[in-house]
Length: 372
Image (cartoon, rainbow, N blue to C red; front, side):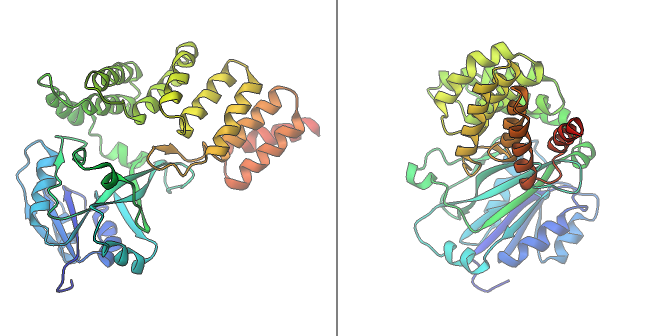
C-alpha cells in the first residue's frame, strides 16, 4: 500500500472463500487499499482477505445491501473508490493509463465495461452480455448507494456532463450468472422477499418492479416477470421518466420465449422509436419477422444489426446480436427463400467469428450433407 492513497477498493462479502482470492489478486495491483465489509462470513473469507492486505470491517446485516455498501464508503481513504462484487474480476488493460486517467481533476465518475458471462464453465466471451457501468467515483463527492437489494449508486442529481460514460482502460469479468454459480447460490426467495419489502409505500422506486421481474425471469416464471415489467413501465411513465432500455429488452425477450409474436410485433416498433440505436431491439424485431416467415424483412433487420454493432455500452447487449448471431440468422433467411449458397456464405461468416457456434455448424453441415 502506498503512503499517498489514491484508489480504494470497496467490497461487501459473506462466505465467498471460493472466489474472493481470485478477485483480490487481480484487483490489488491497481488499488492502494482494500476495504472489506463482512456481513457474517463463517468460512475462510476473512482469512483470505487478510492475506491480500485488506482492512476488514464487521457489519451486522440489516437486510439492506446499500447500508453495507455505504458503510464501506465511510471507511475508504482514497481519492477514488472502485466497487466490485466477489464474483467479479477487474482486468486493467494499461496500468499506466489507468493511473493517469484517475489523475484527471474534472470527472466525478468513470465507467468500466462489464462482461456478464452465462452458461456452463468455462467462461466463454461469446456467451455473455456486454454493458458499461459507473464503477469508479470520486471519494467525498457525496455519492451513496440506495436500495435494499440490487443497490444502485445515486447519480441522478448530477449534471448531464458528469454522467457521460467516460471509460477507463479496463474491463470487469462477471461470473455470477453462470450455471454453476446460480445453482450454488440459490437466492431467489431471499431476493424476492427483500424486493417486496421495498414496495411498501406508494413512492417506491420503479426499478424495484424491474428487479422483481428479473428475479422471476431467471427462474422461468415469465408471466410474473411480464406483469412486473409492465408495472415498472407504468410507474416510470407516471413519474415523468422514460422507462429504461433494459425493461424493453426483457419484455420482448419474454414475449418471444412465450411465443407471443403478435403482441411482440405490435410493440417492438414503439420500443425502437424510444431507443433507435439499441441493437438488441432490432435483433428481436428480426426474430419476430423471421417467425412470421417474412424472411426478406427479417434479413433487412439483421443486416441493420450488423451496422449498429455491439459497442453501444450504455445498453445491455447480448454478445453476437451485432455479429455472429445476426450473420447466422441472415443465413437462415437465405436458406428459407431457397438461396442455399447465400446461406452457406453467412453460416461460414458466423463461424469465422465464433468457431464453436453449434447452430451454425449444424445448419452448414445439413446443407453440405444434402448437397453430397
